[in-house]
View 1 (cartoon, rainbow, N blue to C red):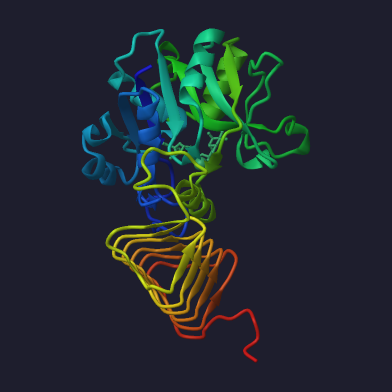
View 2: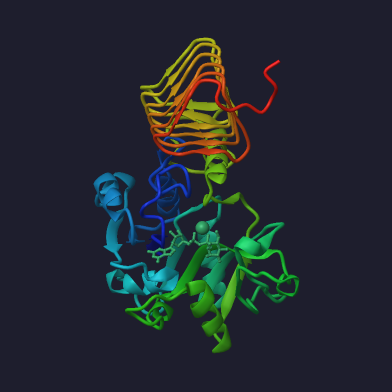
Length: 360
Ligand code: GDD
Ligand code: MG
């Protein structure tokens, strides 16, 4: 298998700030744009040609990745005028594929960090003779995902996207967002209109008697769709829990990019990344967090499991736990920002403005 399609588009995300809602594929995870990890892993599994199917922020991919040669890949970019959905996006790039009708084509969601053995998925696809093979993983709460029950040979028996009722929750196996399609199956997706591969294509193929094969692989897997998950994923890359050939430097407790400045007595641990030109002041303690480029962490600040946006400032002694500080925001000294708080991009928070504990 030498070809892949990477899905990096979607609705409603165009106008939202970079780090406050869904992290975008170009936000650095472990020091490089998140997408780099997926591209590098596909390359390591033998993929040579990847088509990026995009519908928003498309213009940011090409200037960075170019023709892909720095990653040993040949990359192409296709931008939808209006989002075509996951299936529509796949169909929309079919003309760029060079594979023959029965060749396997790898397709993957652009927001997943995983240790999936891609070659094993292709091998399963070829040995089972399936039309489509899906990477499945197990989660405790499947409601945000596509539920995929299989029979005892691994053949998919149903595909239930975002199940809501208890009766629908018949398994803990979910669609992990990586597929191998037989090339000719891609051509059966209707062209020129939005199609959801999860809600239309997979159920339709099953109804028509097609063979969908599931491969449960319980390796590292994380959907990076929320800032909290993104921060976790970045730390896991740095710690070496999530395997990627694209992590710059050796895996360890922290990744401090060469142009960052970290005070000698600051404690930076738990897979924290300190981005380019970021500054960490004396006595600051940072655990399991992502500090993006040019951010300033003032002396004595304590940051845990948080995303600190590009060029933002975290004031002296401020405590930030499980929070997101948007790009360019300025949080004054002596604040306490806890679980789930999202400080909007460019917002200004005065010193001592938000506290959870008493000031006694
Ligand atoms: N080009 C393009 N155009 N890409 C799209 C579009 C579109 O219109 N819509 C979504 N995508 C891309 C997203 O950028 C993402 O990489 C991927 O397709 C999946 O879309 P999400 O919007 O992130 O879907 P989800 O997370 O709710 O659910 C999907 O992923 C789960 C695993 O994380 C589904 O595939 C579920 O079945 C699956 O369990
Ligand atoms: Mg997603």
